[in-house]
Image (cartoon, rainbow, N blue to C red; front, side, top):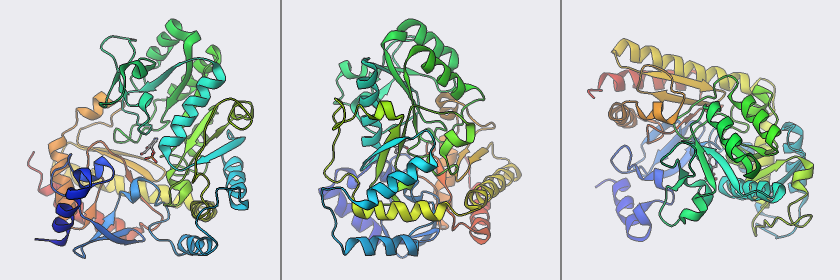
Length: 427
Ligand code: PLP
């Protein structure tokens, strides 16, 4: 028995499904997950000492590559001064200043410990600010696991949603209207019908949780216009895209200003960190200034803050994103031409340092289109690549991430593996 298999068996005895977050369990692709022992640069090593080129990147945070020496040093230096104080620190102020400076839509920001906390708090704030209960989200966008966000579309057009998880009361889901991504007509219809009751729209401005799906031209602008017209807030959930697709997230790329933005992943440099921020008048409604309650024992944790500040400093260097975007585009282009040579229906897309690979002919624009891809072919490709030392996310419905350490040699190595993997596909 391999050490990975032993650990998995042992994990399953005390941890449900052997994992602390479901997609790590390899249910979607089959098999058991490698247990990771260490990571450096573009690589992770498992418990059987197998090395993988990593395109999961801890699901987004590892933009500098794993265990960047400067980030590790910042964490070590911070740790000797104490792990948590439950009192304000200068580091938090510095990180807040960096976030406000780099994301022009953020005038004030509150730190939390995860993306889920950030979106949950932003929604509560939007409701508290507007005095309205209903929210709009889009099918296929994931905003963490808060009750009102684990919701799928109802059965009819413009009907309120149904829970996607047991344990979420139908009454909670009943406040969430779930529409198709990129369907601006549906958004307009929703506001026509429920305008005065809608507190906010929350959207992944480039979706990364139904594989990667880009907004169609005009979609995000349309959301902005509808929200402004009807007095609702626009929340860009940039937990994944923030500092991943460019120095100012998607909002900087498209020039659209949301009222609130949620962040996590990259801003913690691999430590637990999230944040939500935006308009000063809206943020003034948060406790202790205002009536909307939100709190956290470990919020603004000094170790996470140190990792975040160092990460933001390093990704702020000139040409960082140009290089990252070039390498990601090189990977995606290479995969497309290899698939085409192998006669496999395949397409791929990238924005900044994130990418999507789709076993279908055209790049999808909605969850329905992503769902119509060949999942069996993806699963075969995934395992063929994994067995040759390249780790993609273990699901056809996840985006991939490139780091600054994925240099030409790493991309070439990946493409050599991909060529062999495409050749193995029979589905
Ligand atoms: N929002 C988006 C867009 C995400 O991608 C995620 C996690 O993948 C979350 C929110 C939830 O973040 P966390 O897992 O840190 O709670």
